[in-house]
Length: 222
Image 1 (cartoon, helix red, strand yellow):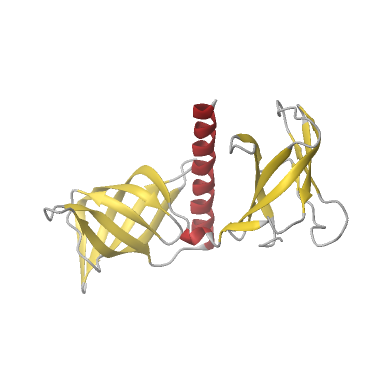
Image 2 (cartoon, rainbow, N blue to C red; image 1 turned 90 degrees about the vertical axis):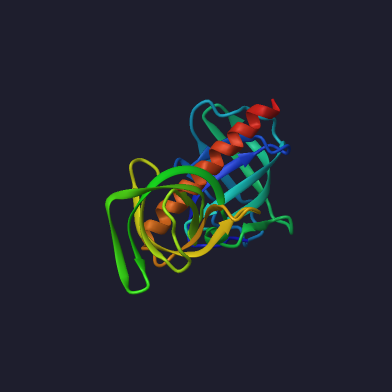
């Protein structure tokens, strides 16, 4: 089972969920998954874990289309500079998230609202309004702000993701979330439109944050 046209990242997990290795380059993903021949995933690097032949692992493959596919695999060769994994062709293969558009991740990002369109009026700020982003996916964000946004407001937001990349796009406020006392907690927003480059940048950011979370979880379990 292979979704999407290209695998752009792989993660290798132990049976207890500990991250063993991850690669965004220097790996070769097998193209013969639909055949009866053995399908070998090859990862090259430095300081890779040395595992016994036959050790069962979990492989998470990320496609360029945004799918995350889980495979079972057995170590066929493993030393500090190369790991070969024989993928198990069975019903255990599954798509973890149908599309990254629907996968939401908790974050702590700072950003700005540059202006707001409300009804037919454009509200321009003398200084950009500070916002906080507490979760994000390719569909939208949940943001907080000292500014009072209204439902159906269309805000131009600017948020820095990875490596200085700035996501600058329009987002519509779908809901104003309040607590039991009626105080505003934050705003659920949907992106109005994203370019392919913007979707890719968000996807890479989500993948990066997931990797950090798995690494942290692995450290806590040791």
